[in-house]
Length: 456
Image (tube, rainbow, N blue to C red; front, side, top):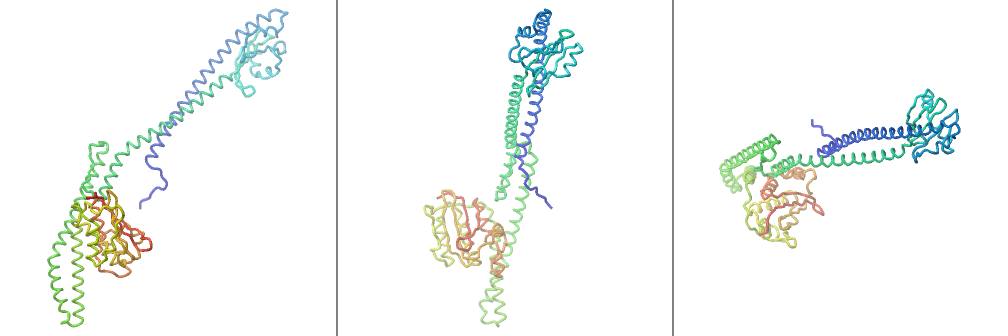
């Protein structure tokens, strides 16, 4: 039992998604590493800058405080700290700042204060009011400590811009990876598209279709297997065709003898008793049906030959076919602007129309319309009937050999061979065309034959 995956994405989608995910992962890792290295380097540089400035300012403050009459605030006022640095001195248990800012002393970490109390300088980073900050502590004497607080807000904004830029680059790399994946999948799947096209041509009857092994060396095994499959299929079909032709041909001679004998018996029915006369009539009818079956088998056996195209007045020929079956010429209508003469196989066109009309007469109450239309490249013939129509489930199999529709079976109709519509499909395929069936507006079936051709 074959299990089919439901909702699974196509191969091209999966390849594209794989490339995009791989590119995103790689770019994200590279961006993260780059950001971390850059951040650490910039923080170290910024911290060294603050430490150098703090040491220089501490030396100035220390020199100024050696004067016993000097005021701490005045000494701090001589420093040039700019907008991103603030200084404070803790002397004899009192905090001194350049301006009235009581929060500065409170912001200095206790751990750093304890470190400096032991007479050792220190540096510590922390966040003050949500902003990154670095503080440098320098002991000036046993009773005085100099603190310089440097803001890292500008550096944080720079790092934010860097993070945004790296994120944008990662997204663009992922998009580029998706584009590369889509292009690569398209390139990789293109040879498979050639194989699919070739398979469709073979399915349509083009058994001479072959793949070139030199086109895609990497698919050499697939190409060889495909060509071998088509060779085997062509050989099998040729054997079947020859068998059908040989059998049909061998049956014709005894059938002719049977037909002649049955004809003699049938002509002498009035001289026979009732039971014998009925039997003679049944024999004659079955021999005629057998003869029709053999003729249809021979027609199918040679229907795979190329179409013998020649200029054909399809409108006049359609009316002739209708007249030969005792149908009115008025059944045939022509669409406006449709050319009358086309390059077609005359014998096949007659067989197509004759079989469609025969199907309508036998199984669908008779034809109601025969329409001829088309454009510059396709000749279209439609035959409408007034029967029960073709069940939707049968519309693809109705053109198979020996297919008998539901309504035909229900009516016990056995006078057909079951090959008429199959011959229509074969003749349409010989022209490179196709046949289809649909519902007719108002009831019944509409058979449509599309024959690629050029107006003659």
